[in-house]
Length: 133
Image 1 (cartoon, rainbow, N blue to C red):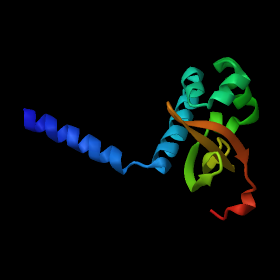
Image 2: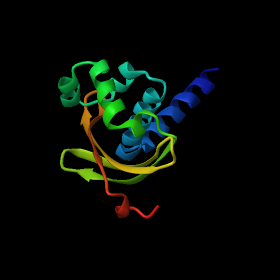
Image 3: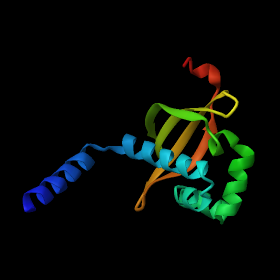
Image 4: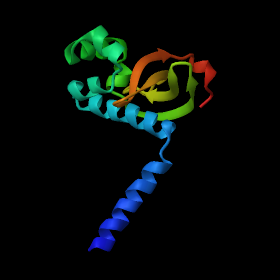
């Protein structure tokens, strides 16, 4: 039994050693999108950076902003990760989101590394012509 426990701990530690900022950033974005998909705005709000959290002050205000300004993020049909790169403040991750009507949208997520992990500090719309996906 102890051998199995030791093996499980070793596998978990070695798996996390292979995860890097790119994977962690993508996991943060995926987790927020998953929370949006079930209207769990309390959880979605936890992935926002401290500056975003202070700007909107509550999950309810945050939800209204997302629903009005980023409906494709609130209800994506599907999404895929594109380019990932360093940003002066942290990391930037480009994604393609297909909305419910089948229209492709391209966004750049900006994330900062905090003591509580990667947090989303902003989202920028990108010009679709910059991507030939």
